[in-house]
Length: 219
Image 1 (cartoon, helix red, strand yellow):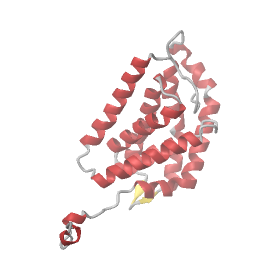
Image 2 (cartoon, helix red, strand yellow):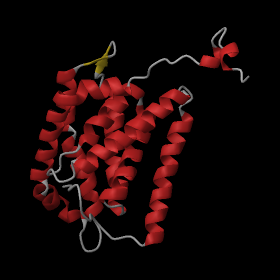
Image 3 (tube, one colour):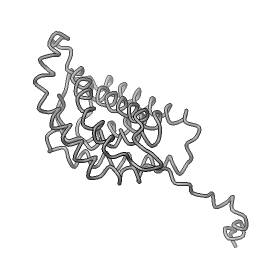
């Protein structure tokens, strides 16, 4: 069960919330730094798409559990690989939650979307830079349910134990169905566009191009 806006799980002290944010940001940074293949251009492209998806999530917050992030992280994992996909998921969650509400639940949302990015990296959703739309749509719809289970774990504590998890899952089923349906619509509508925004483009280094130095000298 997951709502776009609201409190999910134990309320953290400001210090604990800051610690969670530092851990998440550190994890995203490590994942990006470990990816030696990523160029500066690809890094800028990734961060730009993080901002776009975070804004979309905020703008769509009033729609019942419709999450553009799920489709975006699935395609990020498929096109950029698991490490960049996971970093993308963490950064989008953190950035959008600065508006929608940050707290203990952020860790579980980030973990759920990072797991979807890993699935995307293994699911063979792209062939010759072309999105396999039917396969991607199927994955997008189905992955709403394990994501809902992971975010439900944030409610454990404060008198709510694991014995209550089946009841939480059952109560959250309408939200998970809304999430799944939203994923299907978003993938069919914007999946190919998102993929084009994510696919790395080879941009030549101007300073490495023969004859370009004379064009950049200061007079």
